[in-house]
Structures are given as structure tokens and as C-alpha cells.
Amino acid sequence: MTATVRIPTVLRPSMGGATTVDVEGQTIGAVLDQLTASFPAVKGQLLNDDGTLHRFLNVYVNDDDVRYLGGVDAPVLNDDEITLLPAVAGGAG
Amino acid sequence: MARFASILDLIGSTPVVDVSSLSPKPNVSILAKLEGFNPAGSVKDRVALALVEAAESDGLLVPGKPDQVLLEPSSGNTGIALAMVCRLRGYHLKVVLPTNVSPERRQLLLVWGAEIIDSPGGEGSNGAVRLAQRLSEQHPEWVFLYQYANPANPHAHYATTGPEITKDVPEITHFVAGLGTSGTLMGVGRYLKEQNPDIQVWAVEPPSGELVDGLRNLDDGYIPPIFLDNDGAALLDRKVVVRPRESIEWTRRLTEVGLFVGISSGAIMAGAVKCAATVPDDRSATIVFMAPDDGWKYLSTGAWSDDIDVVVERAKSTIYF
Image 1 (tube, one colour):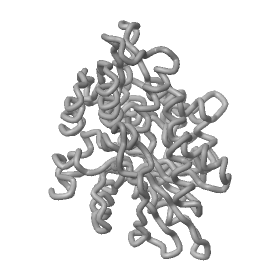
Image 2 (cartoon, rainbow over the protein chains, first blue to last red):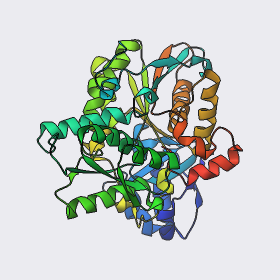
Image 3 (cartoon, rainbow over the protein chains, first blue to last red):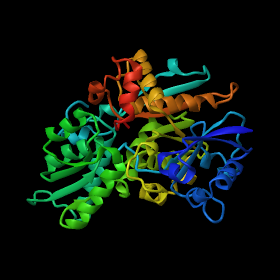
């Protein structure tokens, strides 16, 4: 399964400046593992030591937050678009 | 009843309108709860009144006492609602407001006599929250209601919005609302789940994290304390991002059923449509979504009249949610 990962501005310095990266993997965990293997500097920004998602990182598959789809076990299909976004204060206030 | 002692008595009890003709599936009804019917024009009237009344109950604010100052970060609607309440109660309100909100939002704050403290537009609501926290530390004599952490915020929705929804739409199966402070989702969501644990609660958010300047790394991120205090990750069933183009498209489509609502309402309707798409064909469902405000405050954005590509580009640098 090849998915495209969209990299937010805040993570680009740790990932060679890339805006998108194509990654193989059948789950979000596998995709993130491949990203951290390619860009070791970003590991601490994506995952906690126990392999769970960083608390201020939101990961979306086709704009659906993976925390509600099984977290790192969320499935990834061919041509899915994965977006990484930092958690920030919402605008509705 | 059509006669009221105070404008504040008009807060809440907002109407719900069936917009199912826009539903992508015939077996799924979609209804909009129109919070623009609140007197200062948005869902935040409920929160503002609850925040002030809680502070008065706690003795932080004393009605009639001179020179009391309130401080609050807001991208608009909470500030506007607080400005109205404070005007009636005699409190001086300082609102920390990002510079990139629509001019109507700024004007409305001035209508009720609030003072605006600018925060950098590129830092979004994060920047407004940070600046308000700094100012609060420098001025402990100012009352800092802090809607992102104040339990009176979700409680207002638990006590009013939630019961209104189950009274008017007892057959509700899904609730969809925007995620800002998370007050609506935590308050209404908890109420609905207590009535029927099978009701699904969906959150909609804009992709603002990509746009916020000044984030050096992810550890500069922010999760509203209300969300953590209410175990939001367990309460929500789904959370989806809705992008500016879909938000504008659905804001426009809602005019087909006569609704002139704000751009966040379009975003949340887009989320309701995504939600509808997940319902199996052999099941019926009733989705209620929150329409936080009306369209008046966004006319200057050209959302309904200008070329959509131009409006979408403009929306990317404006806080519309």
C-alpha cells in the first residue's frame, strides 16, 4: 500500500524540507515507523517511547483523525492521503 | 412568550430546522440547530452568560462594584457575547483578539464597549490564548474566565443545549459540532450519551494547525483543558477535518434551504454530510448539527458572492471557525 503523507511546516526541518512523502504501510503505525526510519530526527516528534502518538500530533487518513479509528492500528489503503497536523487552540472561541 | 425582562432571557431555546433535502442519503435526516438566533448572534451567548454567572457565584465578580475588569482570549464570538453580558452587568471587558478575524467581529466587540487587545494573526487562537495567559499573570487583579479551561463552558451546554436537542429531536442518532474550546462537544456530548449511549458524537475542525506560525515544535501545541478534563478522546466517536473549500461550498449550499449561516456552520454541515455517508443504506439515522452563528459577520469575506477560488484562498489566512 502506498500512501502520501503531508508534512506540516513545523516538522519539515526534521524531514529534509519535504512537503509530502510517499510511504508504504498497511497501518498508521507501519507508515510512521517507515517515516522515522527515513528521518530519525523526527521520531520524538511523532511517537512516544511506548509507541503511541505524540499528544500534540494529530494524524488523519483522508481527513479522518486516526485516534478514533484505532490509533496506530488504523488501516491504510492504497492512495490514501495521510495528514500530520499539530494540535493547536481551535478558532471557535 | 414574547415579552422578556432582559435581553439575556432570550439566550438559548434556539430553533432546529430540517435540511434533509441536502442529505446525500434518503435514509438520513439532517437538522441544523440555529444558534444565530441568540441575542448577540452566536452559540457563545450561552457560554458567556454561564462564565459570568459562575464567577459571580464564586465571588470573583460582584455586580455593581466599580472598576472590575475581565480578560478573555477569543477569535470573536465569545468576546462579542461577553461584551453584551458585561455591558449589562457593568464590567469592563478586555478581549485578546487575533488580528486576522473578519472586520465585523471587531466592530461587534466595539458595539458593546469592549476593549480589543491585538494578538498576532499568524499565531491564530494559540497566540491569543498565550497572550491572555501572560497578561493574566501580570494583572492578577483582572478576572480571567478562560473559556478553554472553565467547567462553566461545557456545563452551559450540558444544562441547556443538550436538553433542548433531545426535547426537539428525540430520535437523534448523531450529533455533529465544531471543535474549538470543545465546550459544545463535551457538554452536549456527555448529556446525549447519558440519555442514550448509542448516540454518536462527531467533531469537526478546520486544518488550522498547518497555518499557525510560531510553532517551533510539536511541544508548543495545545489541547483545551476542558477536552482533557472531560476525557474528550473517549467521549468523541469521530473527529474529521473540513477544509476551507468544503466549508465555503456547504455554506453556499445551505442557502438553497434558506439558511444564511456563518462559514463554520458550512464546515460543520460538511462534517454532517460525511457522517451521513457512513450510515448503511438499510438503517435510518437523524443527525443534528450545530450552526454556531449567522452569515452577517462574514459578508466582507465575499463568501457568497466572490469567485470561490478567491474566497478559499482568503479563508486560508482568516480565522472563520
